[in-house]
Amino acid sequence: MSPGPYERVLETLEDLDARLAGLEVGYSEPNATAARDHVAELSNFFENEPSDLAALEDAVEQLVETEDSTHARTAKEHADALKRRIEAQIDDS
Image (cartoon, rainbow, N blue to C red; front, side):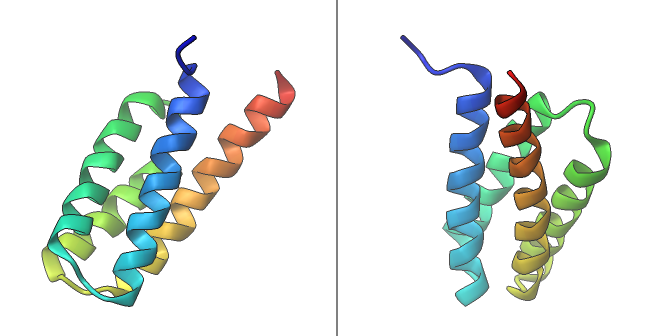
């Protein structure tokens, strides 16, 4: 049986979290590109979560544009907020 939408989003968020953790240590083009791709993928799921998703998108874009790893921490905080929302929805199911 294939994973449901919540599980796929959690997997994406976990991979994004790992990429952002790596970016906190130092800028890496492959990690930054993967983070940007994950955020694009998440936007398909979080259509009704504009505040955390928009903040995550902004932080990742700042990270990519400036190649400044300090934006990774902010992005990680917003990704963690989205992860908590998904986990709460799973718990409510």
